[in-house]
Image 1 (cartoon, rainbow, N blue to C red):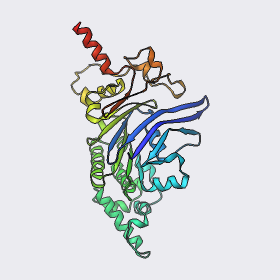
Image 2: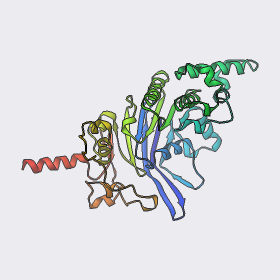
Image 3: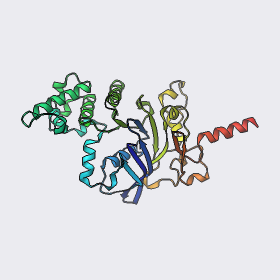
Image 4: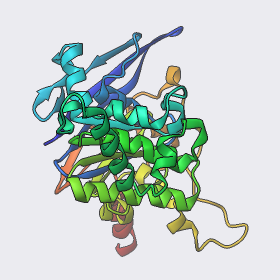
Amino acid sequence: MLIDIRNLSIFADTPQGEVRVLDRVSLQIAEGEIHTLVGESGSGKSLVARAIMGFVNPNWRIQADRLWFKGTDLLNLTAKQRREIIGVDIAMIFQDAARYLDPNTTIREQLKEAILDEDVKATFWTRSKAKDEYARNLLLKMGVKNYEQVLASYPFELSDGAAQKVMIATAIAHRPHLLIADEPTTAMEPLTRAQIYRLLAQLHQRFKMSILVITQDLNTIMQETDRITTIYCGQIMETGHKNTMLTKPLHPYTDALNYTSLVQTENLKPRDRLKTLPGIEPTLQNMPKGCRLGPRCRYARQNCIMRPEITNLKEHSYYCHHPIREFENSKNKGENS
């Protein structure tokens, strides 16, 4: 197992007191797997990635039974040891790439800075030229044909798609074992979005790297995704194979996400009502007890004020007292009696 997270919680200090932002999150990513983490905006998806990367705010308190990368406990590493792993074995690409690139430095210099000396076989006197060639090859792998123009440009001179390709090139410069893509296609046009996801799929096939894709929309998941995990208000809802999660989910939240996807809504007639969850997401200071989806869930019952334990099936798991299958079976029994 490449990433093994068990019962990860993040507590944040607020003016109203300490709040549990992530609530006992568990997530496993296998070697060579593409795993997609899906949830609404503010559900805590990016916090999981930040915990893995070690991008922690001073007012956060992290607690976990296990936060392992390739068998190494990330929580017990010193800052220097953590940087050695993050800088080589784990890389992350962000949404709005131009914002994370240095506006005062050309793309050439930023790419060369990301390339380690051991990545190029050159003497001290020829190292700069070798890194320059390495940077060109990285952009060619990203499908950037006008690489000389891009290398000479500053981030603000690039389109959103080109800036994102530069960030991906920077992230994979030393071929990490895990690439975290945090909503890499937000606000991009469909064609550019498809190009970015196609590029990630090609990198996965070429380098056999694991990829954690973070998104808020099932319509934007990669076709090559192996498994999907849904998260709501800092709690994991369900994890399973892509085909099962998209066609036969067991958790009401996953089912609701499916109903709002284009696949499910493309046959709706004009003025038809969209199937959405009732109510709104709670604030951090007013999280419901137990299952945080409870107040918005049509299957909720009294025992939902207790947080459900994980139910493991074959290559599938969910946290729910009353999964969809239970209600389908009870409905069928009522119809047959």
